[in-house]
Image 1: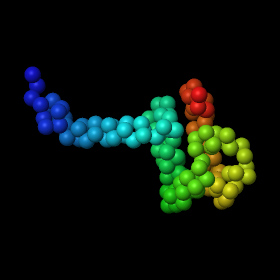
Image 2: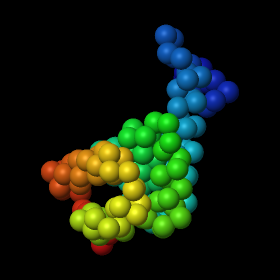
Image 3: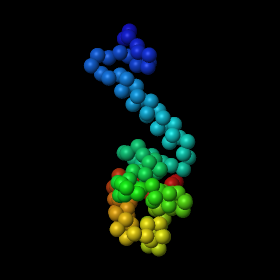
Image 4: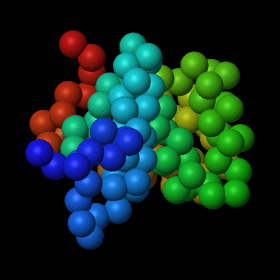
Length: 127
């Protein structure tokens, strides 16, 4: 039988088992975190729930002030389903993101996500 480490993982030569153990802990924590959010879904192929996707997209678009936009999404209760529904509602977008360049940048990322879902067969609405 292989020699076991305190982490419960077998000792393996040439493999950083402490990093592997840390990664397994992170995976378990992420799984527990996603299970606690009933309204979120795992995005096919990416393993991200809505909150993670939104935060990542906002950070990508607005590295210096993404928290401002995240607060607006949260204040206005913009969920994944709401964003899908309002995709073509210019007035709502203007209120959510008044700066045209910011709005266009985020809408491109969102439209790319919708296209990715369409191409992969991922459902756009909850069943």
